[in-house]
Length: 169
Length: 410
Image 1 (cartoon, each protein chain N blue to C red):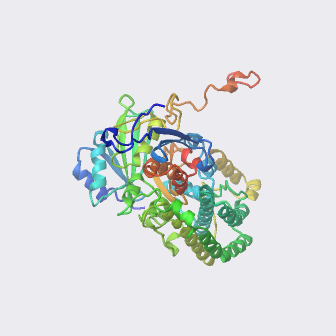
Image 2 (cartoon, rainbow over the protein chains, first blue to last red):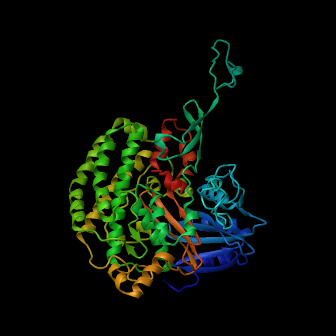
Image 3 (cartoon, rainbow over the protein chains, first blue to last red):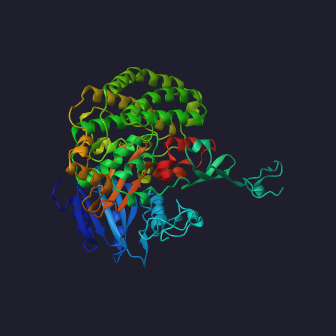
């Protein structure tokens, strides 16, 4: 584990979009960039098209829910470069009131399904996505299962039986 | 019956030609979710023109069990059995992918012998997974014999797994910080016997399939994907290497024992189903070669980390000393705290890159655990890869990804 706080990937993004990068850190030799969500597409295009970066492989798109924060969701893009054999993680914050972020499905086609899953699980709308539908849950499912306020125990059929002791009896 | 649409404009036909009365109409066909060739429960809505596929829309989620939500409620060790149920054909590799991610987040050093054992069982599970794939893919296409042969060999490996950890499929063999149990001489003997005959067995599969006329007709030039598209779609494992892209995490980011092993990464040229088949067979040979090297260079030493935070104490000690009992209680009930942070860790599993994105808030439960399943990402390319081929090819297309729906739907 090295103690460097920056590397050439971070430097390059910082040089191109100085106002967009909120913070950055290194963990286990991999950079983690926190950026403004308005700059997501620009940063992604730079990461893919710059020959020194060449992050041509979409690894993962997902989100994390922090219910107490003002900007509740953190959308995460993990990218890999086939040529340079390294990884970068791009994070952008989305608030609950304006739960939208730009889609990158046209930059990496593989992001299509990953964004659909993130929408399905968190309700984050990816603007410009060609086919944003639920993918794991049924179309008529209500609620966003991976949000922290989604109940783990719901009102189920077990509650109809009076011989099963209920909570609070 | 009403004629809706003509293949060509009837106005342009001259007087002396006969007017064709071919009716063309798009046909929607539902395939699955209960279908023997979908390797689980997958529904595909096909848009057809005659026998040609215009569009294939996969509908997933029939096997969704909410693994990621369950994981948030349990301790870090309690996730290990859940990973068995992802890709239940090669559970050992999934276990490793998960424990590696936690170890990366905690920066745990794993003993040499544990790394050796993990690499050994991961390569064995790669062989068993590819054997399973070869059998079922041949069965899907119509060659039944291969299935019986590959399962004969797979049985030997499953017996070894059963001896190592007591389970044939849902192994739960790995622990955070090492492995559950050491390997014994019986297993080593079995494996040496297996390796002696394995090359001849692979040659046997080759005689059955490699130059088989039907096999070639059904797989050559079917579901072609270029290297560029394969990268853009995020394919991994044999599916991307079939298109000639050298992407193998065992070489790109060596982990376990792989930096000390001599092996090659087989690459395809065309990116068709035949290439993906060919690569898997060659990968089995490479894995057998690796197992041979591992058996010849066996390190001695502990197979589990000695960090008291991670491991349960010796049972004899628990009965005798108070401290050991407290430690036992703490590890079982509370688990262990993982430092605040987040990381992504990808592992080269038989199906492709299985990754875990873990966010820890410093407590004993994962705050967020995301599974990057190769099968799920591969199905994103199903539409692209099946367009323009015949309806009979749809089975070979998603067969050639080596899809397991348990992993895809999680």
